[in-house]
Amino acid sequence: MKTLRTLAAVLAMLSTPAAFAGAGHDLTPKHGGVAAEASGVVYELVATPAALTLHLDDHGQRINTDGATAKITLLAGAEKTEAILTPAGDNKLEAKGTYKLTSGTKAVAVVTLAGKAPATARFAIK
Image (cartoon, rainbow, N blue to C red):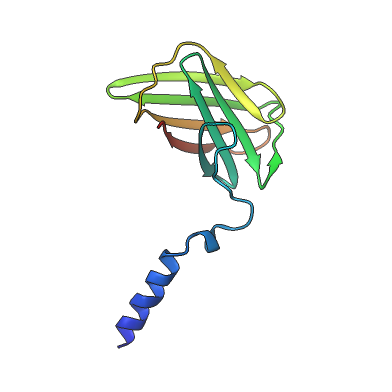
């Protein structure tokens, strides 16, 4: 009986992940990309064949990207492409170039904000 109660409690917790996510961690894309959270920051990757743009958000607040650096690695099948992103506005980083993007392309972003430790965010392009 005790095992049944424990199992029911675990299932109840797993079925309501939003209650444990914390306030302000909205992963709904706001710029038409895909979003992921790392180190308390929401990163949204907007990927086009001509540019990679990474928007940063902290509980609804924009993040200053002055002095930030970022590298994105794109993995499309056996192909691997890397891009260096630079600040491009008050809460975004961007790289211009030619990028092969297909459904299922994986992206790994390593972002270092000024004075902070690097954070890694992972994305799957839809």
